Image 1: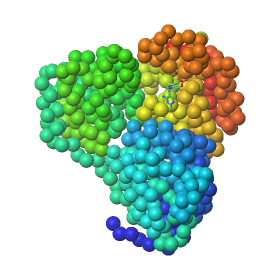
Image 2 (image 1 turned 120 degrees about the vertical axis):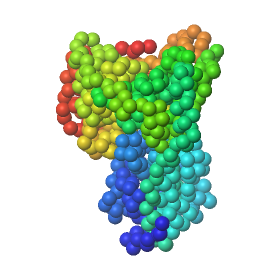
Image 3 (image 1 turned 45 degrees about the horizontal axis):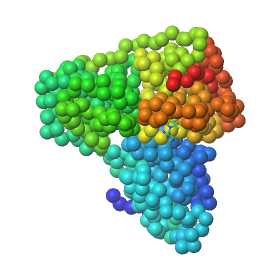
Image 4 (image 1 turned 30 degrees about the vertical axis):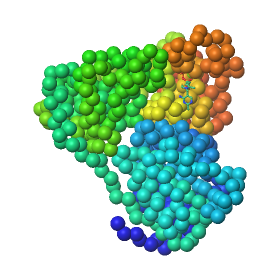
Length: 528
Ligand SMILES: Cc1ncc(C[n+]2csc(CCOP(=O)(O)OP(=O)(O)O)c2C)c(N)n1
Ligand SMILES: [Mg+2]
């Protein structure tokens, strides 16, 4: 790679943005401050870079996550020093757990200003370390281009990850040596080890009960087809990780159940296995520890085989495996087209799922943070036209709305449907304003059950002493009741409230027919 001087890069900020564009990064989600003003100004000098404003850093980082999941290439963030980065941390955590590439740019004080410990001075590296696979601080303007190209390469991997570039204000504004960096080479996943594929084929042909657990890139069409061929030929069970980054599903694709959230159900899915083959996924563990219950969900006596670790070509490994077990090319199961009827009568979480199954358009992207209210949605949409399903990869709530926002920026020709639980919505509800401003095609369904419902269940499961009114009070979202229609309208997104299944189906039909964002507040009883 050779560096080419870019005569049009007049300062560090421009060199940075031109480098990002040269590396294929042309979208920047941001909530900027004074230390980032030269970067902001440079956006007008580089036409190819789109800037998208988020009104809270959790929106910014989650949108970058959703964008990369669907675009297949990263977006940049631009965040304001340590506090801005800290505000965006939960959704960077979710991106990290999902191996999603994010280029995280954090402005800092000018190099000579740091010694004075001004108000916004803090230890940015310590905050970044928690979520970043790579941290680089640009110390001089002449380094910015090279550092930016390195940051892109680190984010893309594979496996993808959060790569953080800290940009001091004077490095950004100085013209000294400003040069755009080299475009990063297109990375490719590492091929699977042939001996490992061989050993897995032997295990699957041993006649002992076996299962394939798929995650990450294995949950796209090619991986699913190969895995289904293997499963149908060898009798192995197929299961997906609990919270996939991006699952391709629907009519015509091989269907796959996800491992259950609750350990008891997950254990039943894995019961009796002697071989568990993990493919771009981790061996399953329980979400939390519960007194007297197992944390590690692999059954006793079951051998775990890592066919493809993150960063390995999982699809290639599955295809090689299919050949080794002599799976016919057409052996994959294909989900038949099948939709439920449009529901009528009482509005429940199940009725919402039924309406979604009946109306989901071809090519839709579902950002699912419906939590307890989403329980029925995968089953009732299984035979709907082909779509993508994005989930809460790291368990840190407040992700669904930002991810929907970023996915809609990445895929302007596809309808995004955001299944959103009321409690989770309120962490990053400002996402709606970005959707309105950018005219994004997102239909949000808020399940208003006026509760942190799942925590009612967890309260019992952890074996806490009989919960009294003071405990219950902390899991209750009434008093006052929250009005999502008013919130949405206040943020510029038209909204309606459904109290029956018929109203819900009407609002969903209209929302899907019209371009631009809408929100439906679904008044549903709590399941827990
Ligand atoms: C960042 C973060 N904070 C807090 C939690 C703990 N938590 C898990 S679920 C939950 C409440 C969920 O309520 P809601 O989104 O309304 O879904 P419901 O359980 O009602 O379906 C909370 C607070 C979390 N997972 N992540
Ligand atoms: Mg709730």
